[in-house]
Image (cartoon, rainbow, N blue to C red; front, side, top):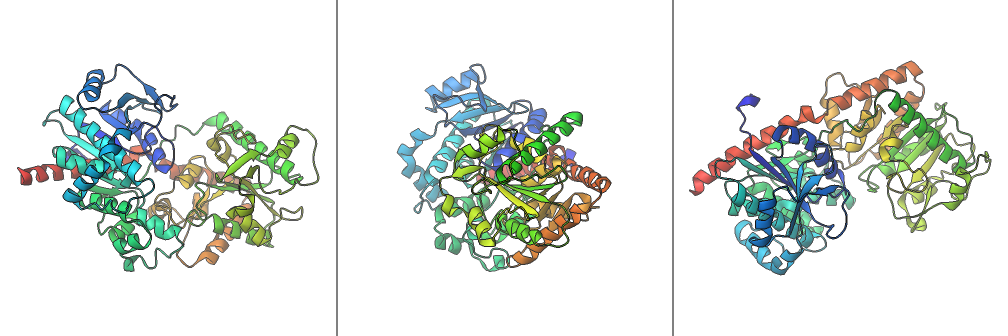
Length: 555
């Protein structure tokens, strides 16, 4: 029973992405914060790196009053450079930002300490390892300082570390403040991502890979070491999906104690007439961009589809998406025109001046612009994977082509110079989205898509796709989500599966499409944090019970 679970009085969470919007973990933390703040009322405290000293961080609202006495103590007595404020997101939780630069002076001492206590191998560190590790040590010291100044042994305290970057914080606290229960969450194993990113088959051979051996082969020893040792030593080890749990079991030699599936809040989804109007405006804009770029006359009956996410060409399935569009273009069964967008930030240069000029004109154009595939120039136009593959496939965005592809190689932040709309205000204009991931521990992009009632195609190698397969009454595109089976070697079948699904969808009547859109929205409703927060409550319970046992053994 949930009522029998031990609950913490205070929760601390450390992540590289607190008030620092760089990836999917930001979405996990920032959308979950409202639910936790409602539950804990300022007893949930996030800790992030302070990159913004002397500059204004739009995500952080500093406060002189919050934790003022402790802050003075931390600065004067514990020699920590901290700022306290609130995260500028729904729920406005308390945030402590810490400057970790001073810790570099004792870097080798901390690494020696980690080796001595936990056999963490930092000898092969390079790149971002040092920076992340010094932030982790700083975060651990912040929690230790706060605990000793404000709390007592009667307070149940949980510390949650996200990703290998904060693993040392959990290990540090377990030694120095054993009363604090530790949770470690890996959102993707560093070695699994590296295997997939190096074009090695991950899934069919997963049982045969040795994580330590692969870490040596792929020069990932230090990151793998901190991740593995943290997973084995914390009070509760967690990950975000069953597919990543299988990875953890094989590559880290440790199964998760609890799987913390990623939910979200739907407060960013407009309602009623606002939604309808935003969708109309988004479609009009996408069609305008296409017509000006292509010198075409695509109308509102055009099927608009899209993919988006990080520029991981294979892992995110961008390659198989382009392959499917090529096959779709040659399909005799396709009766509609299709406009496909690839919204993936690349090494972007300037917005295209020729496109801008056309967009500011009311004239209709019959001739395409030079390179009619892309909205912004790139710094590496001749070495871009999307453009290279379009060229290889012979896709020309010709007048007679039923399928046109447009690459938008920038962040949709509302000021890109061409679309000038935020990502969420663009994707709701799509009719269908495609996320055929090869490596995707969870998959927020398809989840966000169905939240906007845009049906989606994904794969069972994405945590989200696996979760959808576990739901009752989910039978493919008619229920809003088509989950295609994907393996190491069925690239061609996946491309055909995407093509066939798009063709089938294009033949649906307006009434059928309306029902599919409604059902897509229903899938998203089942992934709200109010449903998934119970997994965190389980993790808190596991961590607190293990910490109590651990203390009894050491006492």
